[in-house]
Image (cartoon, one colour):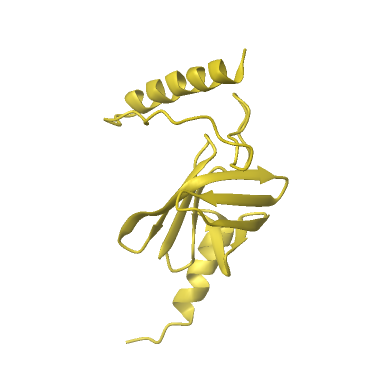
Length: 140
């Protein structure tokens, strides 16, 4: 199956999945990535870091989507940053839609990125970070 057919099949699959879980709109089709842009994982493969990653204070929430895209919210600002990403081993490269690039490193359920620590939402590392943050706040 060619790359184009893989993308079409993935779009059909994603649309069906979104429809099944009640999402009202299907994703807009996008052009094939250039050589300098992140490529989505091969059809049918998902790396272990897909999911929601959050800072201990919950201010920054970055979702790594299975199609090689990310969506980052900051505070009340949904989709503050969006773009493509690629994971190689424990390293992640980002290509933001606005043109900047960044990278990071996974250490289990902790993501080091842009001077921040992100935690896999709901993981033991996340619960510990939230608890540690709560214990250092002044009471009252």
